Image (tube, rainbow, N blue to C red; front, top):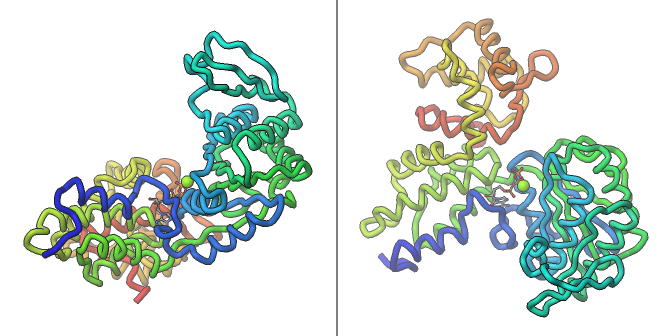
Length: 420
Ligand SMILES: Nc1ncnc2c1ncn2[C@@H]1O[C@H](COP(=O)(O)OP(=O)(O)OP(=O)(O)O)[C@@H](O)[C@H]1O
Ligand SMILES: [Mg+2]
């Protein structure tokens, strides 16, 4: 067999170009199933003064498409600003400026010591000991107008051309004041017309829910809701890597990985990474994934899944009594592809079939099953499920469904077969 690598290190080097469960993607070639949307984002960015907001569920690929669109637009790695619960207006503006000027880490370095400051506009320039000028954003951004001015100066410092800044996880900002100042800033920048676009991201079902009506009604923002990735896209993540590594992943495993992921690319990367390492371990004898490789990859994926996913599942099911009931109830809720399902439908179309695979277990009657679902909606189970209208149930966050499906798969209970 001929492989494009000669050592484990070379193999790992190729693998991580294609498979990266812990990192967003920033190049169009690796961003599967988003061509159409990426084109639309590109066109919107070229519309003068227009900013973008990408929103959708946790883990659906928001940061990846935002980075890819911004990088394509700005023809360079885009400035990136992350928000969190404690973000202040001054903090966000300072981060935007420093990122634009590529000075992320300069603010507190020794470079700033012993400098003679002089003022140019609102940015304070300081000649450092090494002779380079570093610019300091005012310590307190006391008005939206000042914020707009420092940002405009920072854009000019960045150089000619148009620039896109990614502002990620806006949903995490807690303060309404910060959100409304940010809304004002966008309006003001719109009037001042700098060659700058924001590509913003946030988790939520509607834009209003994330940033409030003042910002979502803002004329210079175009919002895009990000759907789950298609089956084709899920397969391609794996087959692209397999082709490049001269390895083979049989169709049945591609189908299983796609089903388990439920459209969340994270799981495709997570299982894929472990699967390719399994193949690597026997690559001198065979270049194809075996059934054993697949099962091993599932177990490893479970062990290596992001801690919040593992914790949410464990917290929901690990109780002094009825743990197995809770697990089976979760598997059943995640069984088919509909995200919201009625009790009777879950029970008849999923729970009873799931229990057929559980040889040593007896199915609960529907009333008992209902109380289990009820409990899973309560805070003592982390409210992993939510109850909508009457007896409709859904996961609190759909990204959890992939983890639930991984566990079911390890227990030899196949989920999600209504796709085929
Ligand atoms: N279109 C895609 N094709 C292939 N892989 C993707 C795609 N979109 C995202 N990914 C991968 O999926 C994972 C999650 O992506 P990303 O971090 O962009 O999601 P997110 O929506 O920003 O998540 P969060 O809500 O946690 O911030 C990453 O491993 C990323 O590399
Ligand atoms: Mg993200």
